[in-house]
Length: 532
Image 1 (cartoon, rainbow, N blue to C red):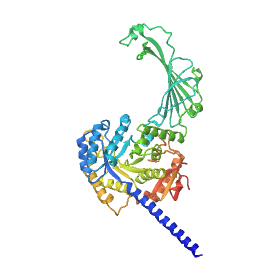
Image 2: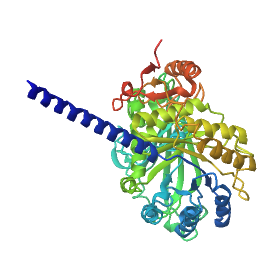
Image 3: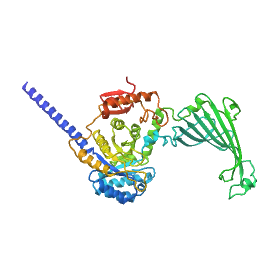
Image 4: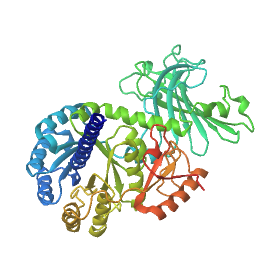
């Protein structure tokens, strides 16, 4: 009996010892991770003077720890990047550079060399700019060079491009052979936000059997005689489909001259235009006409899921071009700044997103969106204080800048950067003395102040929005993915968003339904966009 008790005591002591050692190891690891998660604050330089960049470094080196070279002209010159990098690191600052498709053919190798040269002081690359915001404002194509097979009855020759226009419409470009003609046909289909669809066809009649035209007055080719020129009929048909079933067609034929070598086209002045409408004479149009529903189904973007997938794929491909996997293996991050669609920026493989504070946006909303996306997807986040105005002085005043930096720090941002750029070529800097004073005050009174804890303002609740609902949310009339107008769901979200921001402020995260990320694992208080 006594021996059994002794064995039991020994086993109990061993278990207690194991628990203590394990707990110590876990706590020590968590403490180590917290220490290693460094906070960065700094400025960008967007000018084109090495000396000016060095002067800015000297100005801020005592109250910042990050310098971002974001100069378009300097990003094509590795020698300049190296010289500034040496100066940054010698000043005990961390260094990051900007990159884009302009220098992607060599920037990867330079990054590897930079990491070997400057070690931990070189943190990574600011690659491209505002992918989400540009999507919302119609400035990029999520579908560029995507395959597309239109249902026209013709033989597909090649797909030239699928693009998205600045007006929120989706533009589909492709080429084909028409059954009536042997000339290449270019077709553009535009899907507008109001439901209208236009198809523009440009094609030419068969000319291989035609004789050269010998009219001297028609010759506009300086290097050809009139006997060298061929007559060609260039046809342009614009077919417009309306949701109510109306169809109109504008058929235009222009006679032009072309050289046998395929030189420029020269109009003869012969011009014929015919207008058809489904209400009158559309049966006289010679080519087949598809029903509205059939043309609508050919839109490569049918749903929010379609455009979300295309947008994410675009960004992933963009980052593959600089071999992001190897960059991350070398302990470098790839980051960008944005003003919308943060959730899908992260899904597109960016490591860090800097939410832009400016433009009269609501700070609590932008932080809730970027922090929520980062928290759910296991990423880091930050803020970049950008333009408040589109004209001088561009940036907000020093007092508000200080408050924005402090708020970012307290809500958990790992990066706080000041965007230092103006459109004045003579003076590309926007930072004024009051801004430098705000930076110094932030460094001394917040970052170096043990009484103010980094990330002490944590999210207490999450507002969950519909899956892939890429609404800009900058205002009630903002668009969805830069393609669709706001709908009834937008109004519900807006009302719920204002309600929860009023209640929680900086303690609210805004996330999206996604089967890959379970919101219940991250938050105890959860509200849904359609919750009463």
